[in-house]
Image 1 (spheres, rainbow, N blue to C red):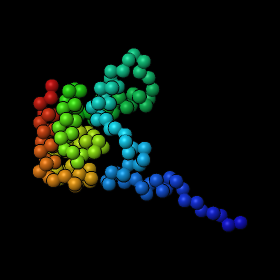
Image 2 (tube, rainbow, N blue to C red):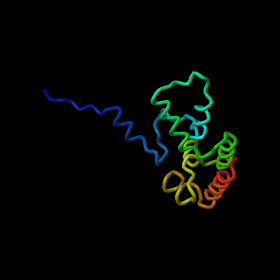
Image 3 (cartoon, rainbow, N blue to C red):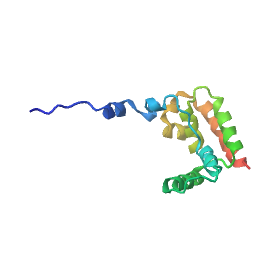
Image 4 (cartoon, rainbow, N blue to C red):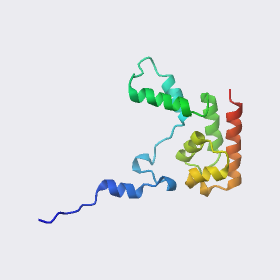
Length: 137
């Protein structure tokens, strides 16, 4: 009896997904993206019923370590800065805010889909974000 080879759904899905081209998979097409700073705020301000699990505690430790903005006002201001660029997707917005690249070249090297935005426009956004980080309270 010859064995049949059926194309797996997982393999087809892997071929379709490509973060560099913003093909994140169908479950992410309409999903919102939070900044690490926003997740930190949400976890730190949970009611007293926060779970005491390894995953929860490691997640909280991670967001405390990597949050770039100390307050919700700072995170909201960064979102507003990035919202002014109509070509940015929610995913790109979150990546820029989470990674805080220093210049357009760095941004495009770590977020390849940003090639669609002119260096000058992107640099102006990044400069505003850097200033926000520097002067946040």
